Length: 295
Image (tube, rainbow, N blue to C red; front, side, top):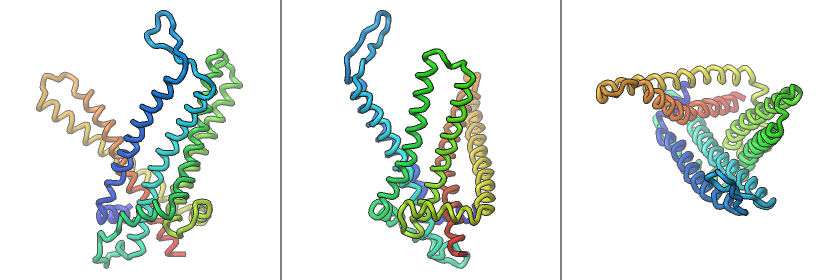
């Protein structure tokens, strides 16, 4: 975590990556919403007495288009996030193997973000797309499962104990599969930046590396989780406390300053998670570089 802090402090422009990624995701999501509304309107309106909104009766082709379009949303969002992860991993590799992390280094800040973006967009776009496809596929399976569960419960069989047990087990398995795919994908992008390999080879290399150094990765994950929780808690507490002070000083007529403080604390948690994720991923990438250097 200390090395990750040094890396971020010497390359402050990396802080703009989450903002850029989520700005692109927000623009795409707005486009997706408008397009989804147009797709929703394809069909025959059916008016019901007493309902202010008309229901749209779809044909089978419209249903297929909506499912396809939903999968496209998951894939594109995952692609932007995965591209951001690869850029951070590539910058960490440049920083580590150029000796800038050593105490004797006198060349801080020479890591090129544009070079990392070029590597990702020109040489490894297929690997990034494939990894994001796997994440989107698992997400789509979970959404389809929840849709089937909702359809089954609408029939009136939701109190069946066998159904409850089976649905909980399947939901747990899909959740574990989603976490596993995201974990392997994240580590695979680091190996792609290290070895210039394709996604499948990098995923196997990262899996084998984690198995050989399970203790180090486990301890780093636990310590990183503790540090992330402390950081997020500090950001939330400081944001809420400052909000209460500002409201009490500037707006004394407000009787409940805790309401805006809670809202600001939630926003602070989202923003803190956004930026602290850079430290967490940089820590993992530095550990990969160190183990490769040691081996």
